[in-house]
Length: 439
Picture 1 (tube, rainbow, N blue to C red):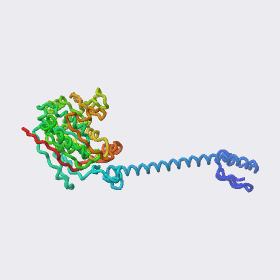
Picture 2 (spheres, rainbow, N blue to C red; picture 1 turned 30 degrees about the vertical axis):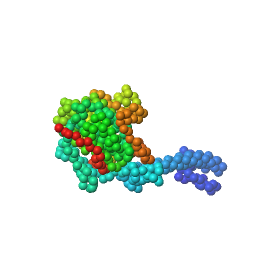
Picture 3 (spheres, rainbow, N blue to C red; picture 1 turned 90 degrees about the horizontal axis):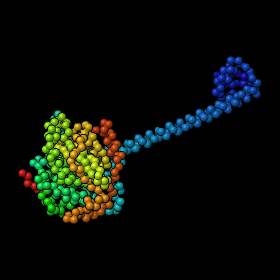
Picture 4 (tube, one colour; picture 1 turned 90 degrees about the vertical axis):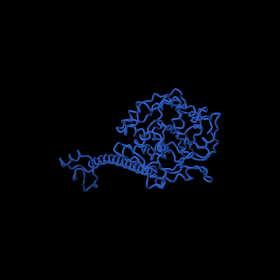
């Protein structure tokens, strides 16, 4: 018998056998060049082949398992890439192939045969472009030459009053009734320095702010309120940032107090806010604004959240700031419109940490009160007021899904996506203005 390549056996009496992983045995044969009887050689070869077969089975089983794992991993990466691409096209690039118009009745309405008049729509061309002016980190909106609706971008005539009370509204006439009641309790001396501005963010017919104010304009001192109402023509899903931008653009006073429809501001809190505009802290901030000293006051405490009257915590959407300061902080990025969440987060993050224009100190003002739909005393119209009787429209409300805006926020925060400079991607009109005599 011959030994070749260590473990390949050739003999005139046996068939050549495959490689055997018995290196010690092969080295022994090569060293002594023994010739074994055929039976003994076959027996030992059988044992070696059996061991080799087991090793081969284990090897091929492991290799097959690795191939399966590799295939599953590659498939998972491909699926993730496809989903991520779809999300980018759907949420960021607004590709019509995967992001059909909000006017699509098949998506938004249950009753396909009789779609309601009030429907969600998509963003229009941006009316304003935010640009830096000078070298002191000052920003201002300019008309977008590529948008025919940019004629709407007209500056408001400056007012001699101290403050604009900006309220965002959307189908909340019950809360608005409590707001109107609260406003009528403000002392006349304070009330004379306030302009009230309501931005109706596309409310349905029968629930519009102007309809409620119209039937209650003679309620107590309501007829003497300096009140203006603007309506956004399109019903954009989660257009909170866009409505805020519009409110700050249309405000005609230097100082603006922004609040939500479900937040009540008591008269004593309103007096504190008015005093804050003339405080030493405000004057010092004004003198150093070019050095990015905080000129925005937030962290107003609130109570009543989750029906716990003893719980007090800041409300992220309530703030007192100057009109120019809001634009220096670059307002709200309207790329987030259409999805839920991250509006307050991205504005506060940029204003507080990037531009350093927002104070993170807690306000010592009397707390705000957050109304709840479970509190019937605050969600029903007062007895002396008239309530609306809206017709129920079969509209599918947008969902509160944080994923879409979380993706956008992470992309913008990391620099993979730029912060937008395109503002007011909708049209609007003034629907109510109560003339006032300014001294």
